[in-house]
Length: 339
Image 1 (cartoon, rainbow, N blue to C red):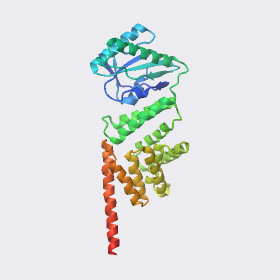
Image 2 (image 1 turned 180 degrees about the vertical axis):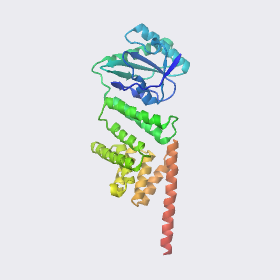
Image 3 (image 1 turned 90 degrees about the vertical axis):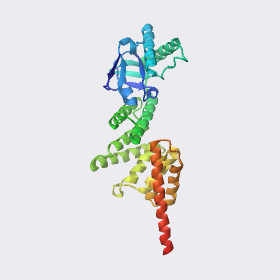
Image 4 (image 1 turned 90 degrees about the horizontal axis):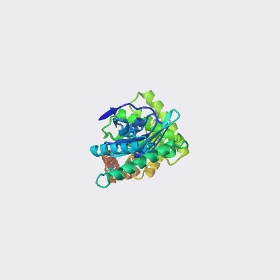
């Protein structure tokens, strides 16, 4: 029997392997080790859905220091995976002071045709034992790799928020973003992608807030983006956020359109074909009255593959902007000719 647990149960002491957690679809978790279980938090941060657990201590909570229990736990997990057509995710947990260290491994082979039951149980037991040994190491630290994995997952959540195509509600996506920021800081509190990600989250949350609140958030965004660029002048998202800030902020508050052009041009160069950056660059060029360069940037958006609803929306926006700009230039040329 399955039972459902909704609660997020606090942050672990350290976590690695977030990149191995499937972000959607059914999943069987094979957890081994001792200690309290903030595993719900890590799973929710990636998946945005409550975890469904198997009843019984031997079905899901195989203790890796008892080989017989490991075998039974892996066998039960494989059987559950076959019934649900789901991958099996090995996870190790071990107490660390008042917290718990978590290590997540790659999903186990779950093709019953290609892999025999014996091979699958053997690989599952080996994976679980190795992960537990890792978390038991007192010198183990999730480190920078964990922070990078959290930052990558955070980018995916932001895309879901902006595209409006994810079935999860915005409130859940915001909760995921906050948890991923917190989990990433466990590995590296100075990770620049996570720091810029926090700025990005603040900007998104304050889009519909009252003007004074929004203004204060925008000031923090500018200061944070400038600090990030002092550390890494080629940081893509910091350039994009700061360019957008200068494009939207009035001159009395420090908005400088020429700086918007510079930062958004850098973002387009660093973004390697992502049309959001080309479209932002085009808007900045229009703001400084450089129509020829703006048309060229808009053409890059129009010609790019539109393989996602959000990309198609940008393409349609670029088409409208390009037509309006060409009509305006034609009208101006006609007026000069009559004169």
